Image (cartoon, rainbow, N blue to C red; front, side, top):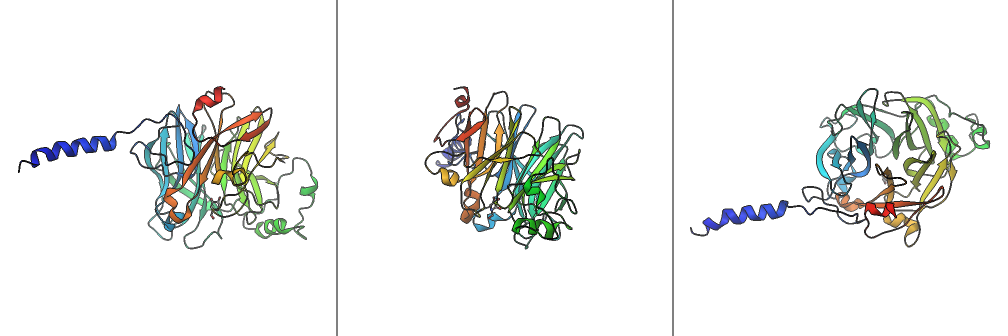
Length: 368
Ligand code: DGJ
């Protein structure tokens, strides 16, 4: 009986210790990253929206094991003011229990990204969607909206963008000259022409809002052979039909776009499933191109496999000049929930960029 007198205080003490979170003040790429509850952050293939002084990280909520490669829960959201410490804001878009829904539990829902539309005052989430039981064959873009940044987001629609539309050519380049659907010049053109009536395939993706408020959707298309960069409608929930094809035939996945000193930068990866490969970067003076390929931005050991990761987003740090963070996923498809995050600072020499591995770093790096 006397032991019972100690049980309650001991239990209280243990639960206080269990919940006391260490405040983080640095990034440790590849390490487990505890949220405010001490649980490893579950937001893979993610993107970050900076909104009213707060960063919101949206990503795929994965479950344990192989099943985690399909969407069993939805899109998870976290918030942070300092980028090191993240508060769990819960599930912002839930998959549906209805197997007939486009976003049925068990579908594939990847790389969610959220942008804010100042005119409609809505938060708009885009993602790559594959319908339940169809593998990666459907290749659609999905969109959901919310009045509140953390959600709940309401699913709007999913489809293949730009049916019946030919690419926009700001200047006729030899490449664009060659797109002739009566006799496609290569594999990629062939896939483009095949999909012309029903809309182009849309897999790995990102969204980007330019300084003038126009938004763009960048996605792997044509069986992943080519990247499309497509304009979104003024409310950001559809495509206008204006788009270009980038780096045709070279299989670019995992696009992440940012702007610095008036130049558009894009980082992407090759196409090797969940296995890492070398990153690649591009620049353009106009969003409509031409986009110039510059090779691999990563330097040093393991740079040929992006240090084990694959790009998902580049985050401009608010209030700091020239401060951009390269964000990649280190996938663990056998136990998807254990996927790690690689956050690394980007360094610039003139307009050239470089990424180097650092075991541990903080935002002070950008002041040096
Ligand atoms: C690589 C993509 O970048 C991921 O988002 C995912 O689709 C895997 N391929 C699936 O193998």
